[in-house]
Amino acid sequence: MSAGMKHTRDDVQTFQCLGQAHGAPVFGNFGRRHCRGQDRKGEGETQQHNRHYSHNESLVTVNGIVLVSPRTDHAKPMFSTPQLYWVGPDGQENCLPLEAGEILIGRKGDADVVLNNQHVSRHHAKLVKTADGYFLQDLGSTHGTFVNETRVEQHALRHGDKISLGKDRIDLHYIFGEVKPLKPGRPDTTKIFERSLIDLGVVLPSEVSDLEKISCILDFQYQWETLFTPEAAFQKILESALKISGAERGFILVRDNQDFGYAAGMDGKGHTLSQSHFKTSHTVVNDVVKNTSAVFMVEGLDNRYREQASIVAMNLRAIACMPLMGIRSQADTPSILGILYLDSTKRMHSLSGLDEKILNKLAVEAGNVLERVEMIKSIEQRKKLEQELTLAEETQRTLLPQTFPKVQNLNLHAFSKPTRYVGGDFYDFVELETGELAGVLADVSGKGISASLLSSMLLGCLQMQLRANVPVNESLNRLNRFLCEKSSSSRFVTMFLFTLDSKGSGQYISAGHNPTYLFRAASGDIEEIVSNNMIVGAFPSINYEAASLQLNKGDVLLAYSDGLTEAENPQGEMLGEERVKAIIRAEAPAGSTNLERKLLEGIHNFTMGRSQTDDITIVIVERV
Image (spheres, rainbow, N blue to C red):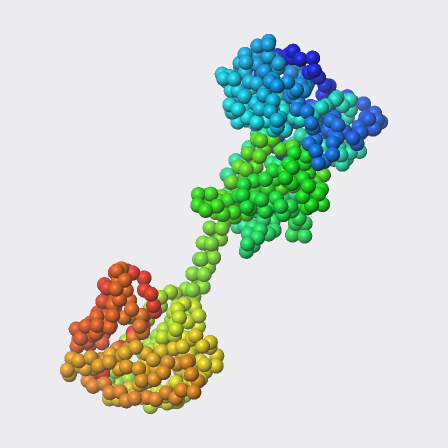
């Protein structure tokens, strides 16, 4: 590409280049690059050059050009007069102070800035003076006008913006300030001079080119599918952000209740910054959270933040703070997953519009990664919980009888299905030393893990009492006192406890339980055995009393938890007691095995796959 350039204004100044930078200036200029001097004189002259550099002056670089500007108070803009800089085809640097109301740029000789290039239109663009600076307007050019690589028709210029014209992208830089040339030296060979630049707050070109920055984002997008943990995601986000921006420090904040706190930190050299290093501007972070939009602060250019106490106290000269929001957070109600915070304290900085766009793009990609990591974490936690619940389900199942005792003239059946993995229902059969059968069906209030823990404890306690030949009423008295002492008042148990011998004679206690059905084979009638005692766990002073029970040949006893009658179909209608009794009348004459099968089929057909709302447990005893 070649471009001849000339100027019609007398106030266009040209300067001798201090050195050629390693590529185009980019992004927030957080970073620092040394300009290799053209003059190879010794260190002594370099030090002499340093003495000519006043603490009342500051430096700015454009494409490797180092320019001196009067240093102003930090509360005021670093530069007061707009300037336009560019490099001619002969390598000569040009500066045009912008004072006129309009500055015409084009190929034709009547332009204020003449660019002799075939891809630049005769009257390509113009700068229009406003109260806030200058406004760039494209004049219908063939090959377009670009600001920070984005094609524009109109654009309010900001400090550090790069204006590119035509197909060949002839670059001009818009910077504030009155400048004078700095004598050539050898700044990259003298550490003293290098330190003085840092101490005086110098803007120096970034070490990373525009292409490298874009490549960094593409690399981040490529790798994000391999980031499965928060720690890996945080590290990659900070590495990319620090490489792109050249910032001295970077932190990621994540939500901690209603606030955002430290999650990870890294310095510009890749070293981890612990929570003890975590200090940020709360005002900037709060603004990002409140507005769900990024904040970019450059010393001398942002009136909102430069006087903030925390910024002054930490001597911050540049801040970039961006919300990290995933795809779902952006599409639905805005919700910030985290915050990416970058700052620098030892150098002056400049953030162009292109820089902010690249950082915002990184923040969007980082938000997507965090959202994905949170989803993976949630899935992994759910899988772990499911594994633990499956283990709990297996454990609870082993506490229930795996085989039923063989008692003469009695057929036993039982079924239990919790609402979740585990539940509060339990049943058991115990063969007593007398040869009698003791059976129980209980329903602990509540559902899930807490109910299952209580039911498992009660089952063990009751087994110990029955196996010790303690009468059923006294066994229940002891269990009731134990539960009242160990459990809260909101926990109670309904229970149907019974004994039967080989002749079908025995006792029962129904402690607040729903009716138990007794099918009489001789008549085909169904008797309801209703509760005759208080629920277990309500009052410690209760004494439970047993009533007599008799099963004749062919009779079938059905005890159940209320999850059976309360099972619902898709329309919300409950199975109910009448449907259960209808199944008993129809199927009990064919025996207990048939009744169990038909009852389970009836539940399945009625609910039509609807999730059960309560634990379902059934105990069936048939006298044969």
